[in-house]
Length: 497
Image 1 (tube, rainbow, N blue to C red):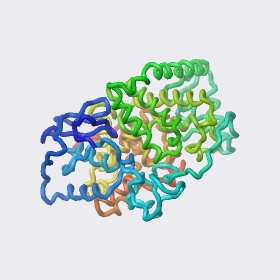
Image 2 (spheres, helix red, strand yellow):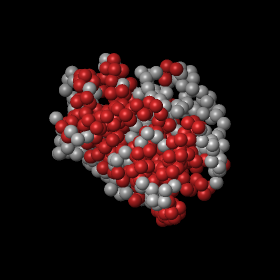
Image 3 (tube, helix red, strand yellow):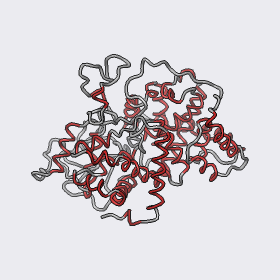
Image 4 (spheres, rainbow, N blue to C red):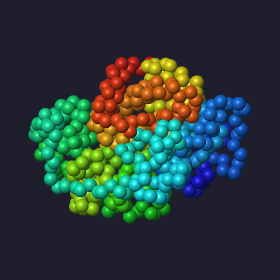
């Protein structure tokens, strides 16, 4: 791992927080660096750190937790910078975020398995021991990360198809309504959004997502020409820029993208296929080239996944087996269409939340502070419990904001959640805050039953959502909408202390 400011420093999950000397950067905006930004000068790793106050419960708790916790983001081979002896306070949230980012990202194959082989080696298809599946166990990816956490090499590949599958009766009525709206020559976007808020049938989800993302026009006559033009434009970018990925200005960015795409095999079976990894690498690199203000930031790779999977489901027979599809059966031109559409829809999403990834990441910092003020208003005992145990919101909510809960829930739930985000005005920016508030309140009793810093943090990083289905997301969204209705026009709940 490179020292801060060293020549091999790269962007991290949302960047890395630095201090210069002993002075915090003035103002409420802290410097955070993506792959495109050079780090500030910092002390070499060999220099001693500033000693912390003796007997600091906050530091002691965090150090104990730091030594015992694994990270759900990667396999440990990253460039996140470890900063020891940090003071945990809202004034210095940048340093607490850094330590959490490091501790949030160790993978399962660094874990002891009591004789059983883990993901990094051993018997294919073996599940992690039951003791590792409990939320107090020091697992890698959280309980609710994906549909399956263990290797699935023994599961046969799912066949793709080139024809539409029959629609279940229970979806037929809702599907008829969608098809009626979608087939209107000049579609009413508000009507489509209203229908989509409560969930989109699988058969029309790809085209609906493209329209709600702003990628496709409402006019039915303009859709096919738009698709052809935008797909051609994307592969024009590939032809123009992708060969520069190993050149001096872009090599570090592409290296980080490759590493992050390789790590995704631990949480998404589909990304084991080299074809998929190469698609993600191209999408992310072209986005970074076209958005130099932020460049690529670790965690963006997660945001491609829902679009890619949804557009792939047009050709998959079984929702549950989407992650295990045999893409060798899919014609190359279909994969290219999925790739281009995923790029443009992800771009539209990031355009609305780019302040979460630009210099200093003001968007994420603002949302975390707002979340704290909101919980303080709606669940004061929970807020007090977190504060009494020295748990800073940035330590768990940074990932919620940066990855849009992609690491907290199964992929099927994320797709359902994004149905609503795409239908809701400012869904990925403003409404996401209320979903995060509803999520933490959903587990308020469980969090308050944890009596120390480590127990609380382990629970918050391993939320028991692995069994959730559409109805659970529906309840969460209903609670989030209620919070939005109550507080969105009441700015006092956003006021900083």
